[in-house]
Image (cartoon, rainbow, N blue to C red; front, side, top):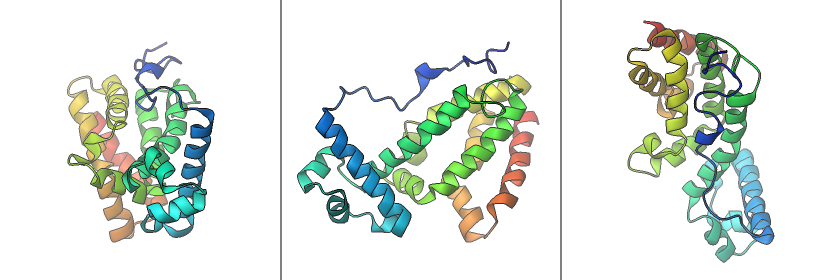
Length: 209
């Protein structure tokens, strides 16, 4: 069984970048944080990211402004936390779920499955992703999850083309950037179901070329 496709992949759970190093929150603090995030998710779903103000969020969550700011200093922090919740599920499916997204399939098949899952994830959370990336000087490269995505791609690509696998993985991540997907989906009007196979072919060319 390959180290890339077996149930314990080469980068395994130990490198999941979303586990917090901080001490566990008290039960009441956990409840407040969950109420804030649930209220934020509902607000974004109903009215979009533009409606996510700290005043409205405190009102919706039923917490004081002090409690809100103890948990999150700004909108970007809230967006990042919402994304972390949503990324955890995708990480679990990549590391432990069924193939082809999870272990047990050839690298090129897992790569194709990853492209679809990643595009759907970004498209479904586009405003949140763009907000978090705009909040830091280096954009997506400052996001704690970025090295995980890149390393996952590098391992899968290395099964086909070990040489330059890291550079090829970076090239794939560039194709899959939120700004690029926004350009294709929103500004150029491509349909998601039409876009996914086209991008999959481009990524396969990068990986195998």
